[in-house]
Length: 166
Image 1 (tube, rainbow, N blue to C red):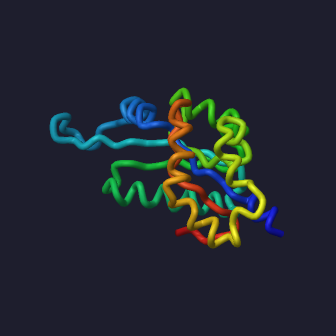
Image 2: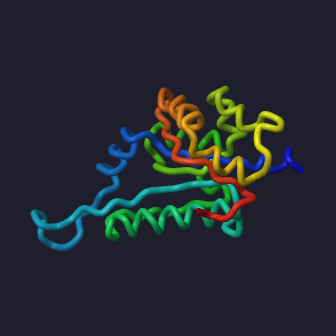
Image 3: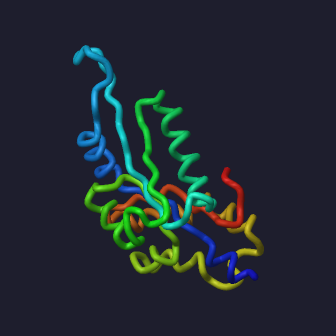
């Protein structure tokens, strides 16, 4: 049972700030008729592998909702569930090139990109899912995420399929 929980650990991963800024420039459109006073709006793409009934989709929806709210409606995220934008390797490539701005990618795939992420799969490293969830906020995990930046990727957080969205 513990092995299944550990394998359910997932990585919410996004393009690096450089790609995000490039996407902002390419995806922006003006609101209103006055060029000088109009605020720009931004439309982003986010993909994941699971159907829209899965927790990953609920996580993506919460992310999109928060981004829109915190940007006063100027930033919107279009979510593409169920591999609509390809397999995980394809989505990561799209993140690297700026063709997509956000994705939820499993830790098991990301371990092919960084050996440091294998630590989340170590046997008996966490007592339970609560301990695993708390570990995602540690300096150690932040260092693991930082390792991905050399590949043009920025990890925001882990999402555990066995927990509620927080």
